[in-house]
Amino acid sequence: MESLENKHLTYEERNFIEIGLNKGRNFTNIAEDLNKNRTTVSREVQRHRFRKNPSKFNNSGNLCKYRKECARYDCTKKEKCYDEEVCCRLMGSPYVCNGCGERNGCRKIKYYYYAKFANDEYSDRLRNTRYGINLSKEEAYEIDKLITPLIKEKNQSISHIYASHPDEIKFSRSTMYKYVELGVFSFKNIDLPRKVRYKKRKENERQRQRRETAIRKGRTYEDFKEYIGNHPGCSIVEMDTVEGIKGGKVFLTILLRQSKLMIIRLMEKKNMECVGKEFKKIKEILGEEIFKNVFEVILTDNGSEFFNPMNIEKNEETGNVVSYVFYCDPGASWQKGAIEKNHEYIRYVLPKGSSFNELTQKKTDILMSNINSTSRDSLNGGTPYEAAKLQLNEKNIEKLGINHINPNNVNLSPNSLN
Image (cartoon, rainbow, N blue to C red; front, side, top):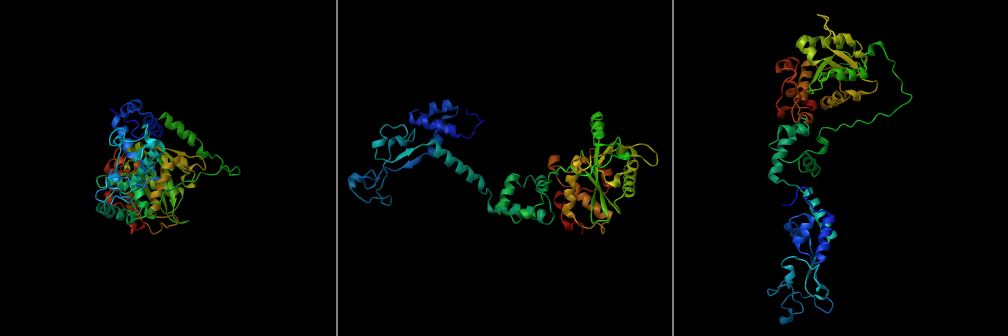
């Protein structure tokens, strides 16, 4: 049986076939040396041989086998009696003239197998096959009717659409992007949610080094790594803020690393007092035990709004320490890259420079629900809402203002909050 490790013949293998044919070897011997099936070699030669007509020198170029009997100078394929003369060697194995000792003086049609020609022809055929559209007009129309509204009206991502409609879309994502390039569907590349690329920060020797404050002692990123090393399996939460316009309302964003669930709280100001108030509300909603299990470790940046960690770590009523706050290194937001990446979903709905002043927590809950109902590749096509059920039961998730949204109704467009 032919090995499946190398289904496609290489140029070297084709060259070996050509040499074997030139020496007059049969397909069986060639195939054995290549560890291939005899049929593979035979099919390769028949597919990629090329025709060569005999020279017209001292001949009319008439290739009909009856040309000597009828003596027609201009006999062509249009004539009913025309029958091309073919060598019997070409009718069966080896199907080519490579190893024939009489080919130089032969006046018949010839076929040859050359490795370079065969490999080039095969490459062109493979490239053209992959470039084509393997969809009927009806199939393309049905898929377009399904996908276009989800992308144009609801700003859903390709990964979310694939996770929500596995039975309707049979081709791969790379094929999807190829079809978009070819203009098969009504939407274009510009309609797809933007792909965020983070430029590598340039090293600046003159960059101001922030002094270590008393707040950061025992809470640095090195301390964070040491803690999670000593407590494997601990629950880690990333925290940040997202601004609208300067001086206006801001979002406090909290991401559960394990499930990718993002909690968004609308704050009047970007300060320590507002952050403390929001955490007090979350503790009251979840209760001390659940909060302690889910918010065991909190990693955030060096924003001044987070410089009162005791408001976050302690329960005001009992005085118990329920979590531990750690800070990233200055200028190293990549250390909490999961939440930075998730801010992309907020910017689909509220582009940079948008004002949050007209928003309410109720509208923020709608945004939060849509984001957490979006399928993720990192969750094997699942949603953060579904994954978070392992940490928080569904009742607690809904208490935080997060509701499950049907995949087809997920809306990440700017009009989703209207």
